[in-house]
Length: 424
Image (cartoon, rainbow, N blue to C red; front, side, top):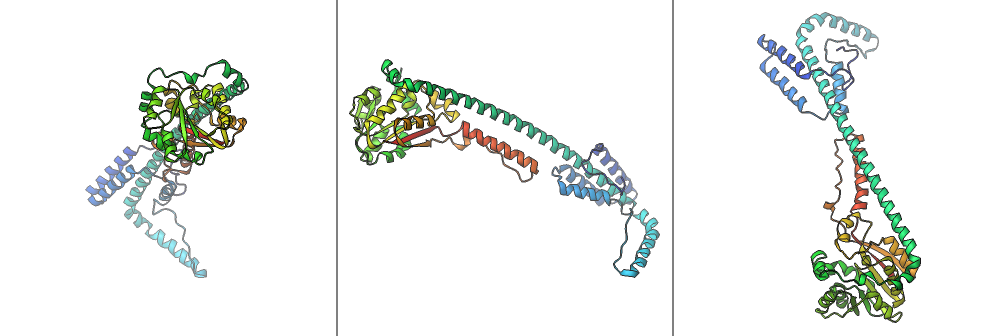
């Protein structure tokens, strides 16, 4: 170690044996305590410094600069440049200072010998621990980089799979729409098939109590206020929405294929017919309804049935009336692990933009999409805190990971339902 070129902390030099170094320092100090040079208080101070350094793991740029200064000035007897601000006489003053330093140097060397040795030991110790800390940070940075690359690759795979599925759905829609009218006449509606067991029991177990459903559907009542005729609740089930319309003084009735569900709705004084929805609509006069509401119905239909349903709705709703259809949101991948495949009578999901396209193409106007039933935040991927003690490059890495988490949350844990509303 020299004062001319102090070794930079955390450099490429061979890492010293810190434990052996400290053992040498303690042995040297013990000898000097025995000789009366160091006191027991000096030894306790050295131990305190050692413990503090071993517990530190936050060496940063400022501390590295301090270590560099310690290497530069560890020897108080090293070279020193004298200066003076006193003009012409300054040269004599500088010369006198140099003479005095040369005169006292032999005496000072004896007096400061122990301080020089102590300073050198501390400088080497701090450099070793700074180097060890830098190596640890590099390993952590490499691990975070590897994890980020893995997450980025997985996100790309998921996005590719979603695009492939969307392309297949769009291809099926394009192939089915031109033949919808002819296919409807040739095949009976699959939605007319009864549930193999009690659909009422299934509804009460998995959809929830009627009060909860009413609160979820309350926001749709506004679409039918002042309707130009009676409103039809298509597939009304237990009649939750019909109860809301009755409270709002909106004339309405329901149609449902399930006898048990219709009976439950009638127990509360609601008007509910039992029968096939599409057959009922086909028998009505054109422009005879004030609006149609269908909650969790269209996912039970095939493409042909859905096309026929929308066309019949357009024919049977009077001018100024509303059409509202609520269904499961396939843009949230979590719905396929829950609501969609839970019901055995579900036929296929309906993409929100596909439903918008169908409504607009049929002649409906003011088509809007409203997404509901958000997934609770604690069920989503959790954002990582950007700790203030991280280096800038590590903060950027954490922000990038959080950005990918946000994209995955939107793709996997989006709103579970959506409703398409339109005007006739």
